[in-house]
Image (cartoon, rainbow, N blue to C red):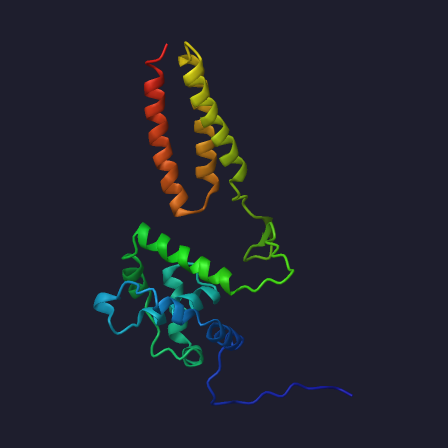
Length: 225
């Protein structure tokens, strides 16, 4: 018996992203929008017609739909069904996103994500379970690649040992100048490695400060015989 697919015209609004209704239910259950609202983020200013939380939500949706540039976020503007699913009064334009996110300085962004990460992990309930973060990622083209190693624990231990050795050499040896120079080079290598591996704005700021102090240490060590 032959099976046939039946096609007919429908005047109902449809979307190619119907599965996003599950994402909507997930967001509602996590109450993440209420949490964002409690942070008192920057008001949109001239874009007062766009509530801050709604702008965040529509920006997330655009990313989940595949946007990786501000210009790609317009996909949501043309999908009226998605706007209804998420209860958006209107879709935010990519120019509005640009103007809004340009107001976020480094300190504001760091504080916001620090609080969000803390809140997110507080929602995870662990009871004799281990959270295993896989060391591999899937690219958008379906290719599996190893994730960048972001753990700087070893570098921090080596850096602490080098600093302790630097102080010990300075206090106990009569002519430590040359040796302090060699130790300073090792300290610099660890600082550079931390800077290249740590994907965190606060750590990057500390790396810049450490490099500044290291240069001062090198200058002072040149005055030591």
